[in-house]
Length: 354
Image (cartoon, rainbow, N blue to C red):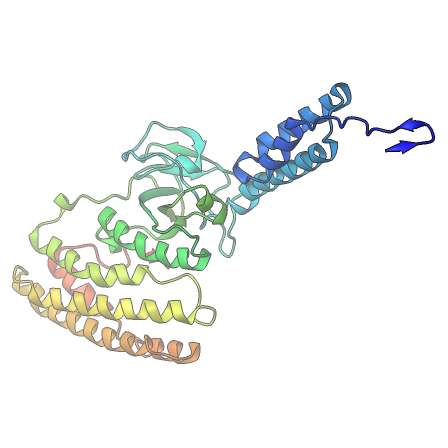
């Protein structure tokens, strides 16, 4: 355009910094945020000397990248270190390993270990340290891994749904590891499963382990089926449906998770019925065990009926009232009689904390 001082032309625009643009773009991609942070810092250092535009983009990339990195660290240290919400990576091989201190993420089946900060306290849900000392199972330790499995699905189903699947998935693994849970010392079941952040990174692993509720363990809890004779193994196998259902009970109380409680009652009804059927069908029991086994089967049938009703409860109060109907008729006397007849450890020698 023409003016009083001659022809005016716009001054040439300075080129835009590619580093600044890349910084902001990468910072918005969670998995590449650390690279975006680095590129933003480099761009801010170079811009004054190269005359390029993009300071605002570089500042934004640095800020966003830094925030994402900080949040990731916070989630790992605080949110990702729940004793019941864990992520495991690698460690596909099974069997005890050489002793040493490492990450709880690296634990695998049969490992005997002690978390650096000890077992979680009742009512607590977080561990402060990621490290654990793996030791030979014949040395004092606080926990042992008995199995792991993979969750299915693409979208994160929510912590409640994962917890429910964890309880159901770990139960059969415990009985593969130790079929006669009555013979175990008093133990508490624990689980590590993925939270939303680790799920987004592709982790689907649940780690199942037990910890001693009555002092350190000094041997492996894994049981060898070869240690039982035919009738003993048949009896323990018959009890497996009911026992697996029992230990799959959700951690939440019926008043806070009635759906989970009624679903468990349905599993318990099926499991008790299945155990009753297997006990009656077994033909290899000695004569001294036949009567007690049939009496125990009767108790399982009674329990199945109660649980079938509890599975249909519409309120937590109704559910708890129905469970209270089990009362003293829980089959303990019959169980003691059949185990004594078969030469198995009697109830009271071990227990499984719920």
